[in-house]
Length: 437
Image (cartoon, rainbow, N blue to C red; front, side, top):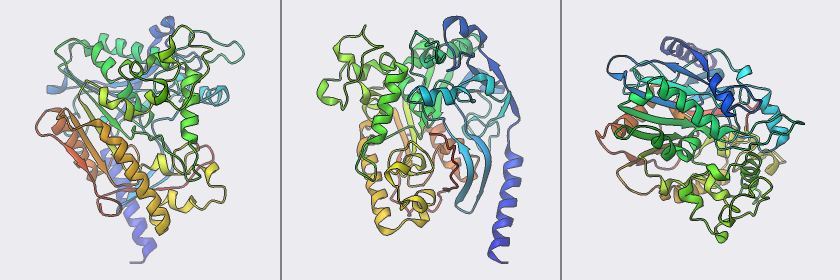
């Protein structure tokens, strides 16, 4: 069998597997009552979520997932996932221009969201792929604010009609779910991927405080451990970008107080404009680092599990416009193009740079500590949002999260460097001009 025919056969088989394991469609719910509270998407439309009700012994258990993978093409074979267009998590908008653009699509307006969606990975209703949470009340909260649910600016500029209200959206959606039965929950887990994974850490303790005492509440973040490091040109462009996000959305007061209250001027890289933060005292004037998880995780009191690829595809790839290690602006000659869209194409020198990124990741990740309430699965894959993937080999992650959540066994695993892990389903990216940043 020639190579092309064999590859085609693998793709056909995998398409059949995906089709056979897809969940049924789940309808959207608009939180119309949130509008009166000012808890709205960027364009002023009501927030929304999808709820697939639990059954059997999962009736009183809830899984809340912040955003979900949106796929145009999602095919895999052997140990490679080929993606022609994918939006995971949702990124952020960092100024009026990018937020206006976002407000005209599903990541900034519920008017543009699909009425139904399928649940994959950790939100799936198939016990084969989701053995511990398949029959829980599973909720996918749509992401429509552009700042990981942290923004809250009261004033609305009539010239733009943009609403920076992500923090209000988070609370309004959770209050609606409490009324739908989550207030009677026995077990609850807050999860998210990418920008949603970051949000699940930033909001973890606040989320627990919304639930009655005695509820078993834990959090899980997938691909949300973003680094504040220099890119391949030696600049901290991602830091600049996040600074703009925090300033644009007025996120200061909604970053974890356990972090911001301890920060001192010497710990910050930036002093930002206080045009919308004048009511706060000096300790709020420099807070950028509290948007980065390495400054937050050590203070989170709620049990936390982190899933992350040490060679996270979003952070290292030029496929995304505003990433960390090799954004296109830092690589004008395109030297990193082939490497960061397919890790198999990396030169020896480029692999050394990626290994250096992994080393920095593990150094920053050590902030999570060694408490048994902490769980983690850090592998050496070129991947992003692995808990949303519908792939049999990722059952290992699902089992690890389940064992940790139910205290069956602790799980704290860090993989060896690439390419030692032969179970990885590494992404092969085919960039789009409109890739989500």
